[in-house]
Amino acid sequence: MLVSLAIVLVKVVVVIGFLLTFAALLTWVERKQSAVMQDRVGANRADIFGIRMIGLFHPIADGIKMLTKEDFVPAEADRPLFILAPVIALFCALAAFATIPFGDYVRLGSMKIDLQVAKVNIGLLYVIVMLSMGIYGVVLAGWASRSNYSFLGGIRAAALLLSYELPLSASLIGVVMLYPSLELGEIARGQGGLLFGFLPAWGIFVQPLGFILFIAAGVAATKRIPFDLPEGESEIIGYFVEYSGIKFGMFMLTDLVETVVIAGLAASLFLGGWQFPYLSDVGFQFPGGGFVAVGHPAVVILQVLSFAVKVAVLCWFLMLVRWTLPRFRYDQAMKLGWLFLFPLSLLNIVATAAVVTWAR
Image (cartoon, one colour):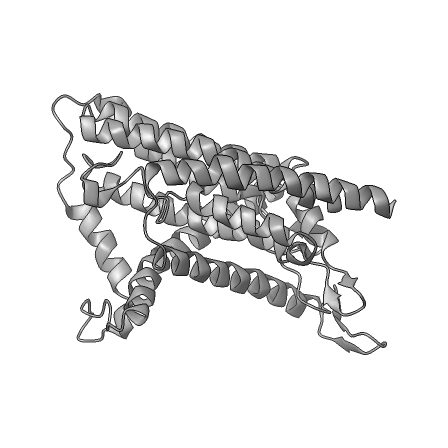
């Protein structure tokens, strides 16, 4: 019992450390990637003993700044809810990653340890629910601030997130039909075969429309450009406009953690999760009978690296979208969700059901 509890605690620490570190690095990636796209140098001023490391110290400087800035609470605000709102938002974002597998398994003596914090039969539903629960932190922040600008941002956030939950969830039904399970590890494991003898059986190849719909709805779930209606910095509104210091930092970090969660979920459902082409539990098995044994420890390392690289590439793509598209108007965002993404997700469900029925 104590050993099992210790293993769970280690996995929790590893996953939270991965999420927070990755989210912090995304603040640097966002600056540098936008600089490259706009022919600028980007963040490069923060240094330690004169060493700048191409701006990699900026996330550390940001953290110190957030911790040391004045933590202001408006006089008319509902203080308990005002303080609780960013905690709820960040907690739900971190907890959403609990059922996403970052590898298959590792053996510790006679124990077989799954490389995910919680292996539950409804893991996919759990992730969607936790992402949806984050709306409470956003709405509470807008309402508890007792500011019209914050309240307007909270209302926009509620409308946006509720509208895009439907296409986000519906876009995944086709994947569940083809890999009949709600446990993310089983779905990732089901993508380990080959299509036509050479193509990886990843979800993106059998559900291309579902992948596009999921990414589009996932960007909206992160509340970032072009779906940053809840923040609207140029309009001087936003659900966290009254926040400062570490509470503001928690909201900013929440958006980046949600970006990593969306990337991790997309990797697990559409890019094979930890799967690497031709990599089995004991080594590489190539078409035609070729085999290269690498040992189980090396296989585990390759699987984790494969998942991490896929998440990094997806985060890069989401950043590319963020710095390419302009912000949608409120009516444009609503029309895109209700008149395009949701009907297309239903069409994808019907088409997938027809193909599955025909195949049987």
